[in-house]
Every structure is written in structure tokens, then in C-alpha cells.
Image (cartoon, rainbow, N blue to C red; front, side, top):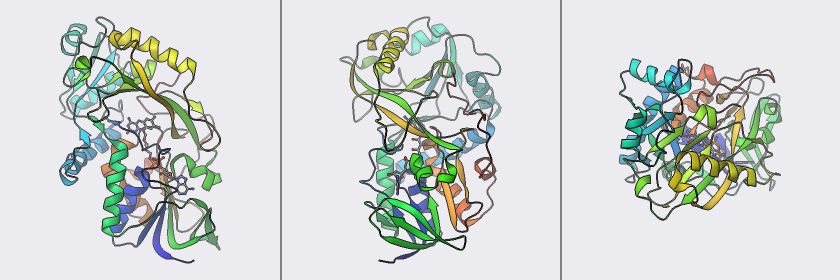
Length: 394
Ligand SMILES: Cc1cc2nc3c(=O)[nH]c(=O)nc-3n(C[C@H](O)[C@H](O)[C@H](O)COP(=O)(O)OP(=O)(O)OC[C@H]3O[C@@H](n4cnc5c(N)ncnc54)[C@H](O)[C@@H]3O)c2cc1C
């Protein structure tokens, strides 16, 4: 069967679905293909929560992008008639005094420069205001009232409904096998069950599955797995805002970050933003191992003593689509006319959801956008170091 669209979007995670909505708003006839069901359980976007933070060390462009995204998150809370962004504020704490050149210090200074109001905390302040933290273990850092978390899986679900209402055709049981080309120009896509969908433009936004569809990206993009734990504790009093908010715990030296008790799921989610494990998105299991659990218990004992024996109700390894430099990959294909890519989330893309659609649609349609040069199609040497400021790189 042949169906013709202006743009086919491959993948209905947050990159794909926001792009589809924006392209539809720009009057294109758009279809989105995803193996489904939506939100797809294995997608990076599908979880109970993702951190929304403006802290990116001294990288001002990301901070400006998050400032814009935060306006969008507040708007979505009103438009969706459902609160999916929770503005709890964030605590970014350190075990030693913050130092120039470090993530927390540079983020703090940049926020002051941009007229934000982060509140610097001493060890005593932390003990008084955030009593779940082990007294004396963290001696510096700050609370910033702007930021919190979004219920990410539900956000994708609501956006998918919105896309359909706007006239985007959603095929939630179609996996793309390959893009179809003729004379260096895109013709459409072919799905695993043999269907062909025709389009003058194709946008591949398939997260970690992107290099499977476009193997030319294998050298710059890879899947890495990161442990995520969901904890239950009998007494949650200490783990709710304002006494416990989205946090990072000396993150560039530990990787640990987490969330207050979830308003719907009643669990405390804790994850590790580190280098992770190289995994194949299809062939490998996404499970945590005994060493991950041991590391979690050690972290809890040293940080939140009352959680040290908390029940782990669920745990998994969630996949980042890591680019070598950890910046996103949003651009037109350099050699195939009509083909674009929006992937390479590198474990920090969800917070930008309200501005992603516009950014990606500008790339697809060739509109100038000052942010796109950072995310352009680029040659990266295998030795390229990751630059995401919050990440534990050791
Ligand atoms: C553990 C973890 C924690 C994270 N924490 C944060 C955070 O706190 N804050 C933050 O901002 N970001 C965070 N991120 C990053 C964020 O989740 C990602 O940036 C974002 O979800 C990426 O969206 P995506 O649309 O690119 O990919 P995905 O959400 O993975 O979507 C890809 C889609 O492509 C579909 N697909 C796959 N194969 C095919 C095919 N053959 N044909 C068609 N469709 C296909 C999939 O089904 C899926 O729906 C985290 C990520 C992980 C894994």
C-alpha cells in the first residue's frame, strides 16, 4: 500500500512527537510511525519522571534553552488541564566546598549572572531545611526554586493525543526497517511488515534505535545503559517537598540524582548519570546487577540513612542514545536529500520538550535557528570526550 505524506517521523518518543506537532502546525501532512504501544515501554522518554534543571555548568546556551523550556512547561500545565511538570525546585549539593570549574559552582555563578536566585546552602542550612540528608555529609551547594520534574511517559501520551487531534496520522504498530531512496533522494520508508509509506521528507527520531535504521551513525552514536531504582519506604514524611526536592548529590563525582516521592506512584526514584554500560538496544537485557544494587545501598547509607534498607520495588537499566560529545544530533543528512535526524539525546534531552519541536522542525525545513549549530551533523573522532556538565565521567 502506498501512502503519501509531506513528512514521515520515525519514532514517537519526545523528539519525534514534538517535531510532528510542530510540523503539523506549519501545515505539513505528517505521519508518525512507531512499533508502540504508545508511550513505548522501552523508549527513553517513558518513565514516571525526568529532571527539569537549568544547570549546565558554564554552558550558557543550554541554560537559555531551559529558561525558554520552563515557560513552555508552565504553559503545558495549563493547556493539558493536568499538572505534569512539578516545580519542586532543585538542590544541587556537594561533599566539599564548591570550586571554580566545577559543575555546581559554574552553574551557580551563571544563574546569578542571568538574574536567577539560587540560594547558597551551608552544611547547617542543609540539615535544617532538608533533614533527610545525612548531617555533615554535604557541606555546600544551593537550592534553586526554578526546576523540578516532569511525568515524562504521561507527557508523551498526552502529546500523542494532541498530535492526532491536530491531524497527525499515528501508526503505533509500525516499525521502520529502512529508509527508501532513489538517486540520493528520500522516497519514504519501508516497515518490518513490508509496507511502504511515501513521503518527500523523513525524520528519523528513533532514540537508541536510530543507528540501526541509519548505520552511518554507528561511529558517533551508541546506546549506554544506566541504572534506575524505585524505592518504597514506610515513612515518606522526610521525602516530600519542600523538605526534599529533585536533587543531585555531588553528581559529577558520583552520578547520583533523584526525586521526591512521586505524587501518583508513591515511590522515590533514584538514578545514576554516569558513563553507563555499552548495550545493544535490541539484543541485550536492560537489567541492573548486584554491583549496581550494592552501589545504591552504599550511596543511601552515606546520604539518606533512613532509606538505606528501603524496598526496591522496581529497577531497570534505561538507555541513553549517547553521542560521543553528548550533544544532541539534529540536522539534515549531508548526503541524502529529504532525510533528517533528531536523536543523540545523551541522557539529558527531556527537559527541552516544549522547545524541541520548533528546533527539530527548523532543521527539517531548513529554517535558520541559532541553537542548531551545536547539534549539527559533525565528524567526531573516536577519542572525543563527553561534555554534558552534570555527568559523572569517571
Ligand atoms: C535513565 C534515563 C534517565 C534520564 N533522565 C533524564 C532527566 O532527568 N532529564 C532529562 O532532561 N532527560 C533525561 N533523560 C533523557 C531523555 O529521556 C531523552 O533525552 C529523551 O527521552 C529521548 O527521546 P527520544 O524521542 O530521542 O527517544 P525515545 O524516547 O527512546 O523514543 C524513540 C522512539 O523510537 C521508536 N522506535 C524504535 N525503533 C523504531 C523503528 N524501527 N521504527 C519506528 N520507531 C521506532 C521507539 O519505540 C520510541 O518510541 C534520561 C534518559 C534515561 C534513559
